[in-house]
Length: 382
Image (tube, rainbow, N blue to C red; front, top):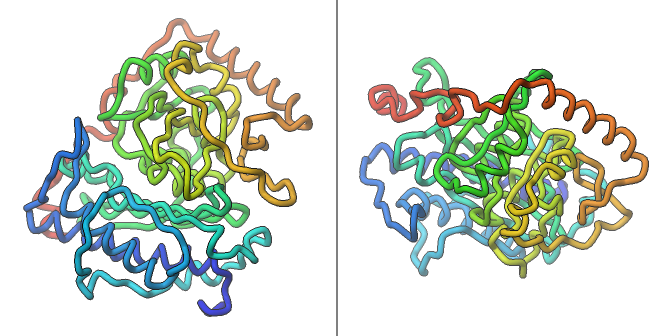
């Protein structure tokens, strides 16, 4: 088994991120157990809790101590404060270190890396008791490209008395993703996911333009992309300027690691370099396959309300991380055009065969309607 000193810098960062995400998840559960969430309203429908603040201090301080030359950006704007000693996690995940680093990442230097941290994605859901929506996100970017990520679910299985609460999913491009079981989606349905708490008319119209069989509305960008990664939905549509780079870096890397694609609504790969705008002004479109088909269905008037993303420079050697085999600017590789056109025609035929556009009766809910806090079970497991 590889030691942490002999492993590449990228694999050591991913390994440390898995370890610190577990500690941050423990902190998030501890805040919930105490009952006083320390809620602050940062803006309209934008909240911060003590769990957000403490988890970010834990993650940023721990990773900075281990990788002092690497740029780290967290969601929360926090003042200087002494970090409790028990917040510092300097461990590594041996499950990560036993894997070999992809060759294109073997010689990456500190100055090429940016780490994007969302300490608690789905804060509104956390305060409302939709605990299965909550994730901890740590994304690793190299030269602006999302290449590695961690999605930790602190409350996974929180309603199951006989199961361990919490799980961690991680992945690296051209290596794979770990910590979950992938399902097989039905071919005769089109299942989409979108925002539960940050929707608007543009989001709704972009979703309806695809004539979905079912719409799953849940909180947290990390949770929605995780539904894609697990094979529970075909696409995630968010045609507005709501989310930020720390919301999408980790999910994008893991999704690309399993062959999916995440871009803005124009089909452009977003850059995660140190000087980019934090806002994803082009919206978010994530798919498991047939990405260009979904891009082609976005109404023009929806795109007019968005801004094209700044894309990263191509990686050395022409390496493409997108599952749809396109470059950063969304151009189709010539050898893929014919296959993609055939797939789009098939999907068009499936849409035409439907009698009328419809949303599933579950469309306005989470996948399960009882995802609020089961207080008795939660107290017992915490």
